[in-house]
Image (cartoon, helix red, strand yellow):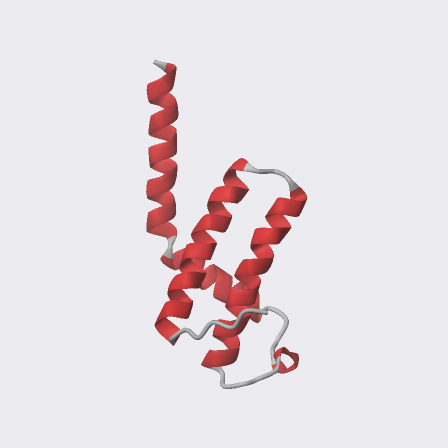
Length: 98
């Protein structure tokens, strides 16, 4: 097992990058096992954010939808990057078709 120590800001940044990567992979890959693999990583990061933000050590004390809420918040914060990514991909596709 590998242990990494991150500041709260770096944990959030890592979760943002994982969310972006998960979105990109989900956009191009329909393989269920691959999607689960990357979603699992995102959820592990969201769990750490939740535990650290609420000063609790066990996920047993959290509500069922907390991870989804964190994922939606981070996804919302990354929306401008996701839109730019989609625009670039569509533009590239259109350019190749001409």
